[in-house]
Length: 226
Image (tube, rainbow, N blue to C red; front, side, top):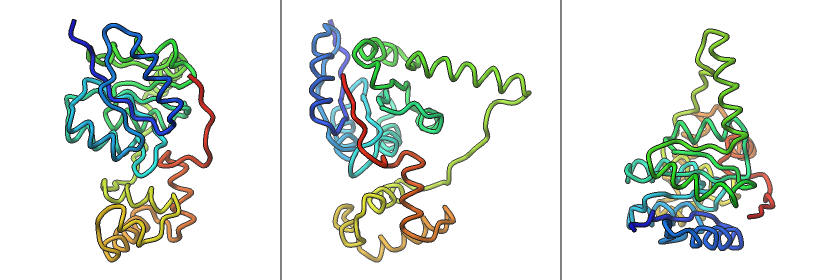
């Protein structure tokens, strides 16, 4: 039997170990690699081309949203399944716009993750039950209004600008950001200025609030269990 190859992208070691143990007990699923930050996830996905990437949203260096965008741009055959502690509309809508194949709330991972992986591997979408119901209700309300839902477009930020935004929000100085991304301080300053102009935000505190509000980083650690 050819197994479904999976890359686990999760920064909490205990959670990642729990996910690996859960999936390794399935005869048709094989965890081929693990990533503890978004940048590592992108590199491993490009190197290994797993069938499915299980992606946490809140990760250091590069968050799961931007990592998903980069993975799907570089290896479009990969299916990305978002695994998150959040079920907010903004998170769900954003990852679906990016091209993710599903969205699973961590609290239901123990019973739903293997099924979710099999579903997205087969080319279908998968959502946690609560999210599925919410999306269906939202669609019905939109149809009743004669529309197709909210028409909210996020600011058009480049991948590099998203990386700089995350590092700014994580409290990194320009030199630290430059060292992390392998670019000059002057280039970091240009990206910072571009972010402020595109988002109409003109201080670091405002950029940080925007990063938290849009799921680029979390405001505080969220306890999770498997």
